[in-house]
Image (cartoon, rainbow, N blue to C red; front, top):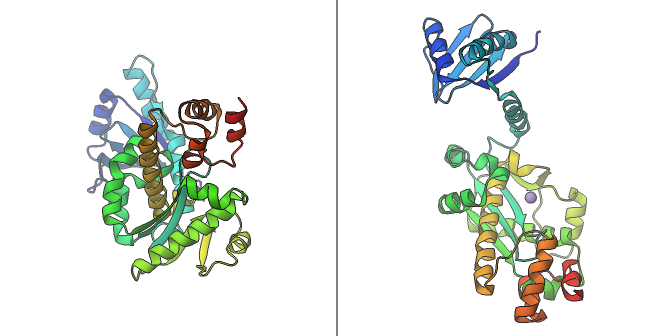
Length: 316
Ligand code: MN
């Protein structure tokens, strides 16, 4: 069998108009959402969108794409269509990865703050029923990784209202009191994920196909870290990039990031300065300012003292 190809690019209004005329008699009866038309040209399926995006699919996609690209250049002083093919390939790749985890009822959890000197560690768990998939897609939850802080602030209240979830917050004081000698962050994560998932499962009788956690250690290590915990949730599926594949993990990721942002904003306004994320030089700089202004004891309430930043801040 010959290879199916997909080519995507963006054309100008004049080429769009020519395409509309050309495909008037070849277009299909059904038009996909936001499309002007979908039509067949021999072995190629061509879809033109209102935005000017054109998708060529099929074994001869490159030939038809080249013809229309030539037309675009001819009508626009030699300027070729803007190629969007790579972007299309990426989404195709993700949707292949998604097959096992996406169209299911799932429970997922994710965390934030483990790489940030300032602020708490927050783990959220969420339950997504299949019938909520389109609601979440409409909000743009699919691409949670690329979501800006502003977008998170905007959409999370809607998610929280509709999607069952649980939240575990480990504030800095508790972190420093309980974990200052035990600095294994993966163990802390395992304990908090286990707690968040159990808390969610205790809220209701959920009908789920899978429990998914973004893989940060292998399964054996994860359960090893949990030894001695009174209740340990079994049957978790661990997978990397889980927030890209599984909507409940994506929701958990968004909810935890939302709460982290809120907490960082609250701490920042209390301190009268902007707390940076991460653990870089900016963090050290602000840390020194805080020590000058409030004394070094303040750090234990707002930062993770076992991070190397503490020495850099206090040594000067
Ligand atoms: Mn994660």
